[in-house]
Length: 174
Length: 120
Image 1: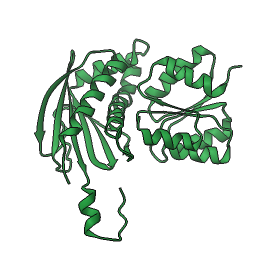
Image 2 (image 1 turned 90 degrees about the vertical axis):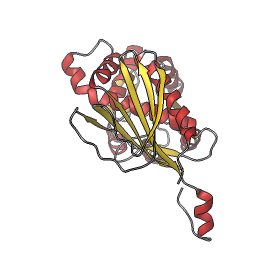
Image 3 (image 1 turned 135 degrees about the vertical axis):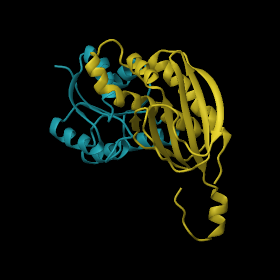
């Protein structure tokens, strides 16, 4: 299985466009790095699984105060502090869902193959430890006026030719 | 009395957003559902004029739910409202018989236009 840097731009573009549209704030492209597994760096994490011709996980991570500001912008001024607290996890999860969904749209644009995503899993807290499967991970940084958003992309494309060639007559699920 | 809409999405944020856009336009929100199984139950109970349907949900996804509803109620009017803006999904949805495919995030005018056209 291979990781491919072509996964970078769809997530960067989707992240910038979605945050701009849904939260009304400008986002700029930040750093790009690599790590051995998609473990989050900050206190709010949203994990979304991807499956289809690409498999793996995308992990969004940001500081609590950044998430709070994004949720405030997304909900607008109509909710009470108590309502915002109740809706926090749901709203930040939906942001990650939209970015991932839009990115898969770009990734699937030239292919007649499908990508599906899981519903988001959200974890919050500065002292939590999330263990994820070791998988080569590209780490993309986005910068907002409130702070950074980290997108860890641990996706691999199945090498279909080598798999099919190895076992003639066997059907392989994509 | 306005046309009745069933909103299906696992995210409260999205259900609220769709509601906040459609209610001022005179539509009545007949009910809400958070997954595909609930969507079918609510459809049968409420017989809405239109359904807005997310795709990625637990238990049963929106495409399966749309397929099930349209199989039993071929005149059902369903609009997919999803973050998964993939051509294959759009084509598969249209083949099922849904009326429109709206990609999140969307401008209010997009969803209003989709609902108006589907109900025309």
